Image (cartoon, rainbow, N blue to C red; front, side):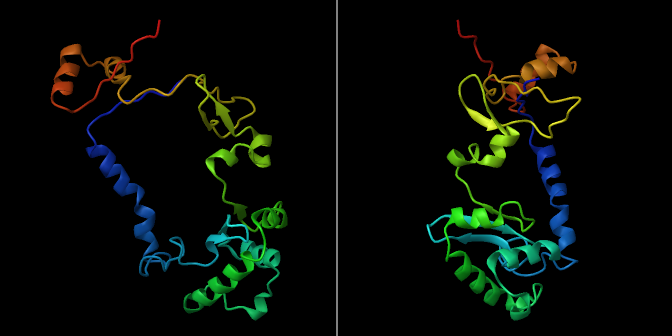
Length: 211
């Protein structure tokens, strides 16, 4: 089915967003997010979880947190772990970042992509919107599709063998296009919907059919 777009009071959305941040709050007590901005593991503080510029001005993304992935990262960079600071030595992260920066700058994005392709190093090229759908991995999996207006978007995932998703190829709805329709399905009457519309609780933008 095509997705619908309903605009309602944002209070619940704000509460849900706060709860979605639970990971950040918990991370403060386990050492993942207890330092200043830009100095934590997942906010570009860790040299093994960031992006690096290549010799041709492109970038590679690195996310080798776990030891087995970090080992593959060093292998691809041709670095000896015994000659480097410890991965989790926060005070040595600036030096480790300097080493990674210099190493990534020594080759092009294409060269690094070939080196890390098929490994578990968690190193991938940073692609533009124009490049991402033509990437071999995405082409092989059919990760992107085009709707009736030619607009490209990700295909529904996961791809299940017995019950595959059937993507909708019509254009995306505008904000509030199905508000009244959905509220009516939930039992709201037209006067109630009009009252909410007048109060600014919802937004309705019915699209006229193109004849």
